Length: 180
Image (tube, rainbow, N blue to C red; front, top):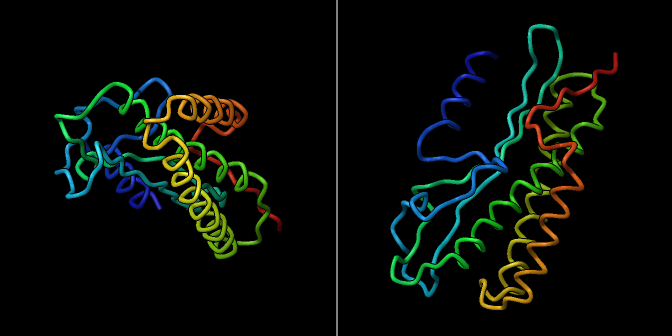
């Protein structure tokens, strides 16, 4: 268990990834990937990493992080702006919002054993990951990739409001209850 956790920690702390933190906003230097051949200013590559484990006290723990991948995220230097950067930050913020939704659901679990925990956390992860992908697409569509400033502001307010609503789940570590 400890080895798995340490390897996971090393992966997340690697200079090519950024774990979401409220005080750590993205900047253009974080986008280190090669631009793709499509009409876009930038692309933010993110994911939610979930690690489940049983510790030495027979307690179950689930760590959930929103992660930004620097070398996969890219920008076209000639087109970048602060407006676009703010738009890309909100993609990362939506990933954190869904990490919090996952933490909220995981915090309500009551499991018999580790196998049941794994099944239930996988179900939560895949269901909310699909929902997050749909919301990310909706965000891009409605804001027209940041070009619609009215919709961009509406989305910024919505995302901030939702993050605040789920602030109880901002910490990545959730202890899961055991029913015995």
